[in-house]
Length: 145
Image (cartoon, rainbow, N blue to C red):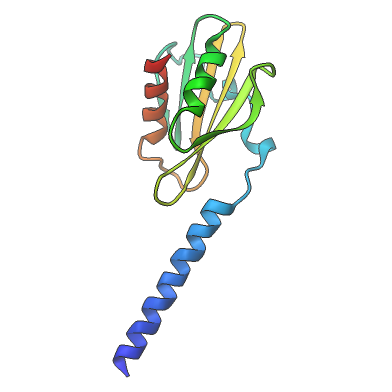
């Protein structure tokens, strides 16, 4: 009797994990929510060229030429588990979605080219802490630029 109840409990837990995993991987991305102007996430005191860690994400502003967004797009789509979600170079704004390897947690990175530079905001969708992965991704992309 005890073995059956333990097996049933394990089965219920396994089913809950599968449902949660499916929800995380299959939830649609709302473009209105995620393809937003990244400069809104910046404080006037934020340093240019420095990744700023924030709760659940990170920001980066770069000065440079008009081809920065073109180069960043090539770097982003070449990154593991990353694809363009919305926008284009012609629009002046692009949002990419990057998923974690195991669970498929989505992180959204939006970049926009403005007259005073390239603004990039990387943030998580689920939870409160990204464990530094968005800041690490921005640093990696910055070195490849």
